[in-house]
Length: 260
Image (cartoon, rainbow, N blue to C red):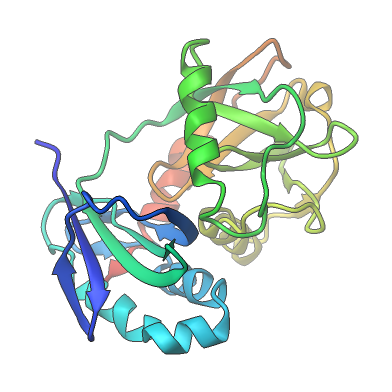
């Protein structure tokens, strides 16, 4: 049975929050991570991304560091969870909110499609402000049979997914969009690239159009699913898969999980 409880941070405590409040609310910063039986991947990087995305005065005024610690203490050490933390603006006031959610079903593969039209992101380097738009897009493309939309930068270059980062293989070289392309700093992508470097696997940033990914093995990565292989690109390039590679890398990433 799916579970979700919502808490707000007030006076140094997490307290249950009833969302019947009609106040205007926007998400300024957000982060989420997958927890299984009290273990997770790269929690320190999630903490860094969430807290460093705030203005320092807001971080200090809300005591956001203590909020993070309280959220970690709230997460059960048994079961599968997908908590989310948010810095909200509610009628002009900063509010920290924690959502303790049961983890949705995880998958190992995904179908993608190209997002048509202009890039809809308003804050491409910060996770949070564009979440409602990305969720709306995902709902729309699900009618096409896709689970992710690929966002294109100026020039038609692949830059990101609506809810994932993207990496691809050219032979034994692990590639991704150039660092200068504006996108959310995916913790899962960072972790995979760091692991590749530790293993002596060559990595490379390259600007590519969808057509230039023809015949590559394409991965979609995020905190919930970890590494997923893209098995189909609707109205896009034909993709490949090296047998066994995905399983090996998913096992390697699972081995990096640490207690929260």
